[in-house]
Image 1 (cartoon, rainbow, N blue to C red):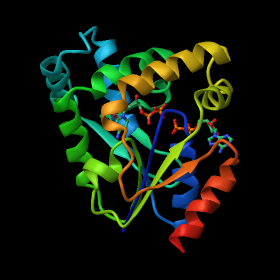
Image 2: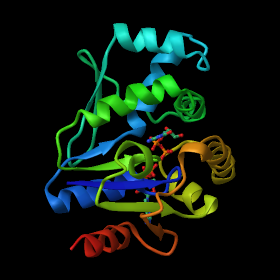
Image 3: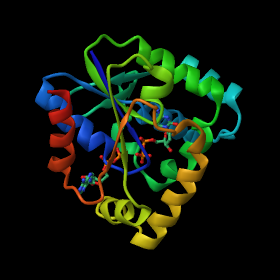
Length: 205
Ligand SMILES: Nc1ncnc2c1ncn2[C@@H]1O[C@H](COP(=O)(O)OP(=O)(O)O)[C@@H](O)[C@H]1O
Ligand SMILES: Nc1ccn([C@H]2C[C@H](O)[C@@H](COP(=O)(O)OP(=O)(O)O)O2)c(=O)n1
């Protein structure tokens, strides 16, 4: 069984997915981390992030592996744990360009489709493109200001700067971010984290 939780940047996808997955006793899968890993490695190698061939060559010679756990996902490149370097402002700013490359999307999708069920998958296109046959689909939204206020607790920048970056990324990510027609759309603005998790668990039960 696969549950998909998609949504816009900083809408609560990974926190909510982790809570839902723990309640169900299954792992969750954070697809965005693979796009972030491709971006980090491209930046470290000083590659042009718009160039798929260079990035794919790098990912082919230094394979990246997603480790889905209920409490939090980790991303490995060989023995190196990349996870703690994936949420910098530098990666935030580059990742939409990398996620727009069809070749990189294929690289991510192949890894996700190879994972053993059951799991909760979160990202942008889990319910539309990667797992269209999933029986339970959710889509999280909230205003850019609310999302920026939440994220300001985890980033050095102030709320207006984060809000501007989120709006820019919303625009760049629009193509792959449409909700699945059969997804339940949840406005997380008026809800706390547990409220969102409970809404989903109630639907699942
Ligand atoms: N409904 C909510 N109410 C309050 N804070 C939330 C809510 N959902 C998420 N958060 C907080 O917002 C931040 C971004 O959430 P996160 O799960 O990282 O989002 P995403 O995976 O969509 O980027 C985190 O600090 C998280 O704890
Ligand atoms: N399934 C996915 C997941 C993420 N992406 C892209 C879009 C986002 O800008 C980046 C990072 O996504 P991630 O979910 O890790 O982070 P945010 O919630 O957007 O802050 O990757 C995507 O295109 N498709």
